[in-house]
Amino acid sequence: MRKEFQMQRLEGMAAGMVHVLGIIIFALLCVTSLIFTRFFPAGCDPEIPYNQIDFFLVTLLGAVILAVLALWLGCFLTRKEEKAERNLRLLLSVVLLWILAAGILWIWWSKSTPVSDQYMTYTSAQRFLEGNYGRLEYGKYLYYYPFQLGLTAWESVVLGIFGAENYQALQVVNVLCSVLCVYAGYRITRLLSEKRQAAAAYLLFMACCFPLIIYNVYVYNDIPSLALCMTALWQFLRYMRRKKVSGAVLMVLSLSVAVVLRNNSLIVMIAVLCVLAVKGTACRRWQYFCCAAVLLVCCLGSGTVLKQYYERKSGIPVNDGMPSILWIAMGMQEGDKEAGWYNGYSIYVYQDMCSYNSRTAGDLGLAEVKNRAKEFLGDPAYALDFYFRKFTSQWTEPTYGCFIMTYATDNERSAFGESLYTGLPNRILQKMMDSYQLLIYSLVLFLLIYTKRKKKKVDLEWYVLLIAVIGGVLFHELWEAKSRYVFPYFIMMIPLAAEGLGLLSGCLGKRRTKDEASESG
Image 1: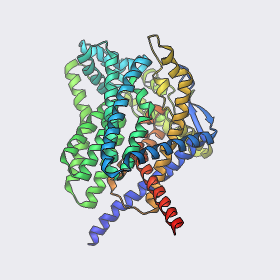
Image 2: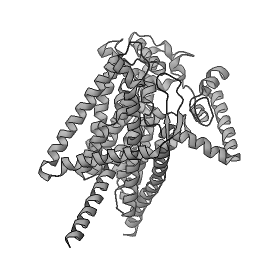
Image 3: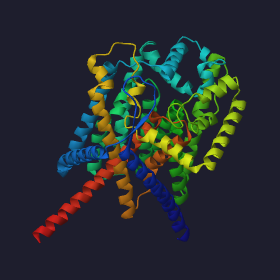
């Protein structure tokens, strides 16, 4: 009995630590997003996140209006018990069709074409289809960015089916992945919360999430990897809550591919591993440890398998590439954009100073990290300012870079398409997303504070999304900064925000009932 109590206490302590850290982070997110807004100038200006102090009453009023609309529509759809499930299925169908139709229309309106890293992976995939693996050779793109090999392989498969010049096929596949992402998030919400109001709120929130729609034209790994991560989290909860072994299998498969497409998906893998390790210890279930071991081997081994495949196919050894420490060092530096944003340091050290010698570049990067750490320790006020600027530049930019990252085109846009980037519709969307961002942050904070005050006991797997979000916040305070990088974690907040709105609706309903009872008395 004593040992069982200790195991339960271990799970409770782990949940409590995550809960408190989550409250701290989301309180900071709420305050900063209310007071500040980072923004990019309209059009194709340099990617510099400018700062403006909000007229916060407007942002707050917008968030309140969105919350009231979501509450009203959610209550309207779920007020009748016998029709609630039917209405939710109908709303799910409408939202999925909206995401599909809006994504296809945006491809047509934006006429966005791949540039920079998008262009390099896209053209590398075209060359792979021709049997040309030259970009794996010394000094070429995949030589110093071998982590892009998974994305290149993925794009070569899509282009092999739909045509080597058909980058629009990659955009359409992104749209389909967005639909999967929304559906997976809906299933996550249903597994996390028993309240139908929360499910309705999630769907309404996702229908308003314009960056997800806009990023469909970004020919890169953002949307496919996000869809796979959300699917993995859905299947993980199926496994933990419903004891479905198929959930564990699909989780492992989804995360293994997600990690190949985008290395940052390892953060989600770590979140799942943390839950499995603690639950396995607390519940003394060896199955959880087996699942964790298989997940770890598959995720870490999938990249190695792909690397060996292309080495045999091309006859060219795949290089180790730039050491990760260079991105951490760059994330500690000032630059012409903002604190910790890309400034060319990694390329300069690896290519110009070290002639692609990974070991020497790694040593220089580590020395730079130590030097900057020493500077920060010697001047705590500057360190606080640096990391505050880095934090707000990523988390208080409500579009998450979706417009500036997709603006490039080789075609002539229509007047309406251009206005969505630079005109009044663009400004309206940006203002709406500013309030929307504050609403999502605030609802998650409300959820965490409410469950803490009410001492509601929830299983540790309930925290898997929160652990992934916390991991994303901490990781991108260390790594190179960019508002686009944190968008996947914003999407992972939305099921939690929906549950927060469901609880808020319940609180308001109870208060209304009490007021009516006191008046009748």
